[in-house]
Length: 568
Image (cartoon, rainbow, N blue to C red; front, side, top):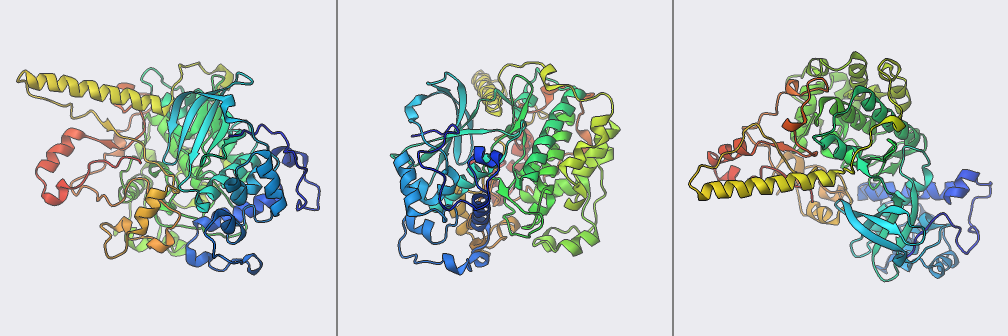
């Protein structure tokens, strides 16, 4: 393994560097403008339907007889395609594995590796569908870092390209509210790659889930201002995050918030239309245009998620915790209203005919959150606009009177210091509580007492994952056709258009026929919020007692239907 800490590789800058001088910030990042453009094209190519990418530039067409990574890199892979064999050889000689240099040479250009045994793993602090995150110690400096271990499936070029895109995006970004990539750790003997970051003691989901923590309005303003500042930088640098949620908003003990986990991020050009996948963003924070199948979108997807985060911090719990895409869209329409006829006509969204309600829904944000400050309501109304064009930009959101009226956002350094708290910690607490409950229930049943459950106690299950690159989900989607699809959400897009996509929630699950989404007006706010009555971490909310009683009276069809869909 080897790690990069901004040191130049043994070789000089590549001969194929652009003729125009590269700016100093770009030199420090080690990423050329040409390299960024190349990875943008390739990364989006991996997302597009195969029919749409079947005609690459002729000069890049070469023989595809070999199935090796090197052949893939020379033929259909533009990422690193400008690298000569000599440059790849220099990277391998510097310590990079051949499989990484062949497909992602542009991503590691200018960086040099270090031995893996110079890092000591301390604890596992996070887990995703295709990666794990560890707390570790740099043996050379003694610094505590976070290592994100990315797993690959048989070193498929497509999987490596997704990782390379994340690296290039991170190298392009440089902002106090965006996590900084400090280096890479890899091995010639394994097919794993570690991304090295500063260690962050909290994430926003973990803090919000703690029963002992209650955010004040100045704190909420401080966190949301930092989130929007980070998004402004990402968008100005041509990057969409596409998975803004509490567990991806990292915090240190100085109160600084950093946007993390760019595994689903993508380059974009607002002046150039390009087809992107709609299967991104964790379900609860996914905007309606993506649920309706939009493939041409922009900064609005991140702003919608930011609006959900703002409302969640004020309400004390997720505002639209859907279990399926159908249910999620239903919750959005009930709270935010259904799209206007004008929007349906101009957007021409693929799934409009399936999801367009027969009767329009009235917008209820102001009624639902009537206890919120008016300045907060106005910002939420903007960020949760059904039409993405009405959400404006992160820059305009930062100018909202939510931040210019009292009480003002507090300084990050004045925020209280909390014990380390991450979403995974909250999951562990909930799991321990459930085990204790089950054990207590078992003892009670053993004594002949009737086992009871509190009906108003919501049960938290793992938060849905949005990592569309998970190969297991890719394979699962490829097996689904219109003939054997079990639900509407499985019938689109056709499997041949879904080669790089995965479902976060297993959307073959039908919505319970008797299920009625909870009335949004029942949500608590920061002014009447008690942590004890809400789940301690984000995840679909299910009343187990009610669900079990319903299923006892259902036919065989309902008995096969899981109450929840766990993230894989």
